[in-house]
Length: 197
Image (tube, rainbow, N blue to C red; front, side, top):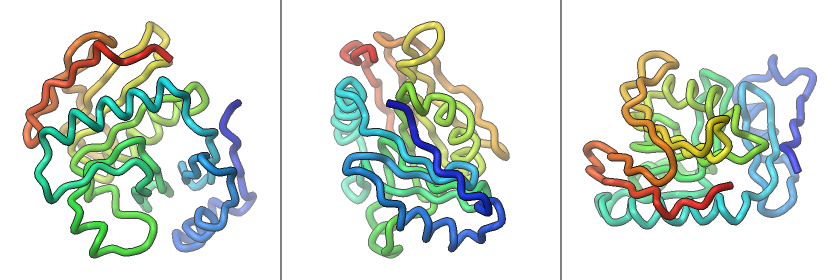
């Protein structure tokens, strides 16, 4: 099953509030992910078992190193209005107070300390290109892309030092290699147990 793109013919002319309203009112089957990517509301099917397994492994590793006042969220909307984006990353590390102060269904992407995207076959291009540019433009300090669908085999790439809508690659490797997340995480993420897609 591939992602269903709902392209509203006037979506590019909608103001941000109208895009958010469309996002909130999109009736998708339970477990599907609804996002706005470059002013287009997209609906993706529920992730695979391998995808969920990887998310759990990363989640567990992160909880061992983050401060108590930060949370790791799996369904948190992260807004990048300047790019017409409201993404729902697979994992977002955000200070809890941001959620408590903001209310609603999403937070500014800039509030995230780390965003993790795990590609699915239907959304790999969005995660690699469009969302990477959006997270960079929002100033998210670290973006971890776990790409089980990379052309040369499953890879993991850590991006950082955002400038405009571009990141610098801090670390890149294949599944099975360790990836070190720098401060404030100081985490050696072991990808040995990551299942192939």
